[in-house]
Image (cartoon, rainbow, N blue to C red; front, side, top):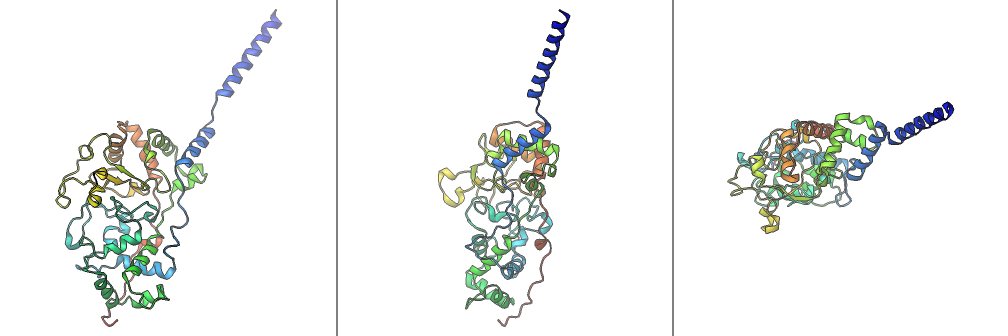
Length: 356
């Protein structure tokens, strides 16, 4: 009898241990599962954003950098790409609304220029498909460079001493100083402005690249539904969505009506006039988001944790706890990359010759 009881006890302990082992999930297994979920939604930055439609060369990128910082092509001698996309502010400008030609406020906040060639389109309304199209049309924009036509801009470029640089960048062209080549050169430079971040190392398998808190935030970011829009290689920027799915966005953001837009910013509608485009905006990329306040198309929210709360409220109908916000912000901070070395310092610009 005593022997049978002993056997029963051993079997009971063995069964209990088996159940415990089967039910046990190690931290390593949890980390692996989280990484696999993340890989299904996000992709690491590629090594390059170059495309066949716009051949790249070092000479073109060097010229593009000079043109990016060049103010003398604008009609007030102050505006350049760098006026709104500044190395000191991670490729943005830290202003609520950017300042354009003749000191006039622009209708929207400036997003970072980093990684933008990888986005589905440019501008919050998506009215520029590529960085090259954006650079070219800016020459004639009354809010940017303000030239009356492309010929005026081309004449300025020649008088400013750029002819030789254009000839080096576009060696097989009879007349290389053109608006099209201005755009191609700036695009060539912008396509080098990628910012690999700790999250990229994590996606490639380095579990130590991001903290435990960031992993908790990543889990919540995916589980709550944030990644439904903010996914892909740029963690957003690949689609268009209505801003304010659960209520009007200005109720949460405090956005003001704008004189330039004659009321509320209605997103794509301003370009298309289509009712279905009312309040539709390009989903912002979240790379470098921790370094580029204030937030949203009108810079209406100053702090990242508040922006996270607003997005959860407006897009998901959720009220996040302080811990939820803290962890999601920890994840978003892993999307910060270094300012590219080729962008960190403004170049020396040609001396105007007025003889070319």
